[in-house]
Amino acid sequence: MIEGRIYNFSAGPSILPEPVLLKIRDEMLNCEGSGMSVLEMSHRSKVYDNIINAAVQNVKDVLNVPDNYKVLFLHGGATGMFAALPMNLGVKTGSADYIVSGNFSGGAYKEAKKYLKDARLAGSSEADNFNHIPTQDELTLNPDADYVHCCWNNTIFGTKFGYIPETGNVPLVADMSSSIMSEPVDVSKYGIIYAGVQKNLAPAGVTLAIIREDLLGDVMPITPKIWNFKTEAEKNSMLNTPPCFPIYVVKLVTDYLKEQGGLEVMKKRNEEKAKILYDYLDSQDFFKTTVNPADRSLMNVTFRTESDELDKEFVAGQAARGFSNLKGHRLVGGMRASIYNAMPKEGVEALVEYMRDFAAAH
Ligand SMILES: *Cc1c(COP(=O)(O)O)cnc(C)c1O
Image (cartoon, rainbow, N blue to C red; front, top):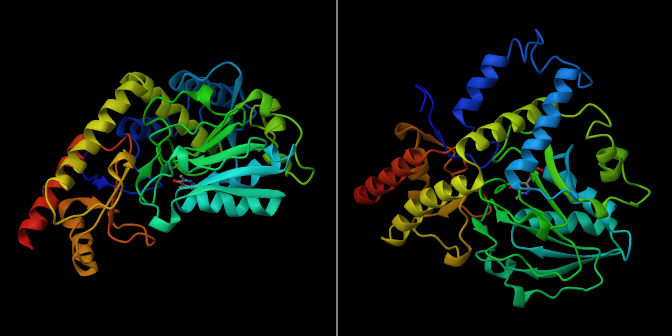
């Protein structure tokens, strides 16, 4: 780690790879020989055109995106997609199935109800405070739905899908905001994959959407044109000024992922890192994790002590150890360590060392 930086366990916006930060710094005054920074240039310039095209191509390369999918950069974050999805896809039967496995999928379901005739709750683990992912057997799916929505990795609760829901001919839509590019994905199993980039790919400001081409078609008449997937696909995500800077960082981060050897390598590293933390959690009973072991997230690890006071003390002690953002989300309490791609293994080891010391001292 570079001198002066700390281990940042933030759930989002979150840690970025240091080589990428250095590259941004190096190009800040003169990007690609243009004599200006990416912050200052026209999105219609040749230099920027190359940047956005390279970002799209990198996403295709890294995620092995089949040819019949479009890669888009959209506005409004993942939350914007909660509205854009029903407007774009909910036009055949006006019915869609929502699997609610946490706060964000609950938010997506609630938003969809505003636009759909029939937003259905197809499965939920809310009764268990989202400590697991609903199983395929627990889902009641409508074979005529326009789409099925799920949230792949539950950032707040620390769970992730261990199976791809079987939806027959109904397109599966997945919010992968907090797991995108943490491991390989079989894109062909999904109608749409989308992600706010501020967890694992870039600073906040743009939404990555990977959309199967047959889903680009008629939309609800009320659809804002900046959220019309078909129009945005035709305009290469530049119907209006795109979020130029985060798209540029997506390009740099995906360059970096390619250099590192791609998503098989990231998956191996992420599993190694998560294992260090979960092995420790399983080896003692001072800290507890309530997540169903089969559904544990590789990216967001939640845990707590037996009391709110000790949790508070643990969080208060983080700065002295060179950590930040270990406080859990208010819906869960306790602690959360987000260990995205850019978190080095040493950061996780140092955290476990702090946990051991803290448990011994109490
Ligand atoms: C952070 C997050 C969101 C919200 O993203 P915004 O871009 O802030 O709207 C949605 N879904 C998941 C899984 C997230 O982690």
